[in-house]
Image (tube, rainbow, N blue to C red; front, side):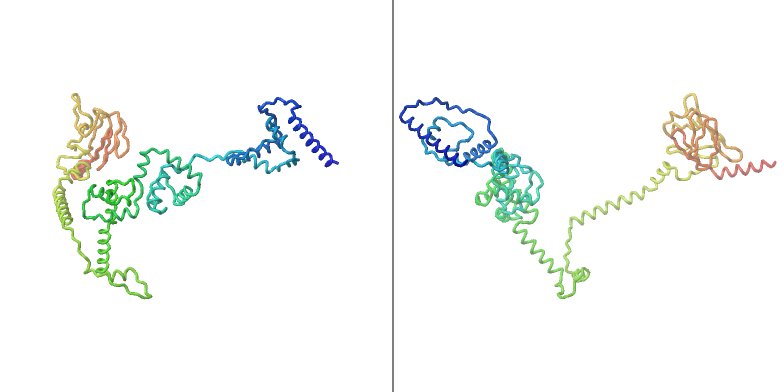
Length: 463
């Protein structure tokens, strides 16, 4: 029943269309006024999918000149209505509902392909350097070792970049656009850094190492071989590379001389090694060396300089040996390590770094001398004594031969690191270190004279 109803409706629509067409041809039915303005309305989900498919098909057919398909959700214009009415009516099957997966794919295809403009670590200058270097050497390993890029690329990265420039249309197009935007001076600087090819180095190696070529020589070489050299080469660049090749013994005459000298050296020094199953160790090979055939390469200039330096050093050593006694006396006077020469009247010595004070009476005063105050030992002669009192202390010798120091100043006196405060006293022994306001002295006793004093004191005591 449903199929019968559908067929009847289609027949009725076809008959109505034929009647309208015949009436329009006879002119009996007036034409309707229609506007070519497109009125938008909301679309349903199936219409959205169909319209997107129609748009994608129009993009695909636009270049071939085929008339794009009209969206099902849009209203037809009057001209389109006439064309439809004149065309034979054919039943149009209903469009099936799109699958959900197809809907997602269609929505993704609507988004335009966005290609990033960021070339990553590879800069346009790096791409230009890579292209020039590969064209010169035809070896990616040599390019990786010889070219200094803006970043430190590995060999794999260099290979991948070169293959991308060759076979990836998107990266190649972006790289070419970026290289076209480089400044001419930057391009000239990049071209000047291009590697030398084997043909260029062969031509440069023919220039003799003993000759002294000028810029005119290399300019003439450029004129004679314009096809062999790179277009950015200059005479100065050729001269610098030739000097580098000469430094590393890469010229033709240097290579031949070096090989010949090596062969002569090997022939005169080494005997043929024995062949067999026995493995030759280092000591056996050293025994095979003939020392008598070794060349004695003597450098007369170097020997003369060594002789003159040896004479100069021996002269300086002799002078120091003669002055050793003087220096020893000066060192002993500063360090205070040598024993002083006591006379019969010196009981003890208070020796500092600069001054030596002799104690010839049984009691002496220590301090800082002024116009109004005269003392026996002026400590200001040894060093800065503004912190020392005018009368800092007193050293006394008792009848039993013992020395004592009494502190009478404000600051303490240190005897062998022990402080002696104001109003206190301390016994002094031989080689005692006396420190007063950062000034250090060594107290030395005349043992012979003190022994005589003790002996006399012992004789008087029993009586």
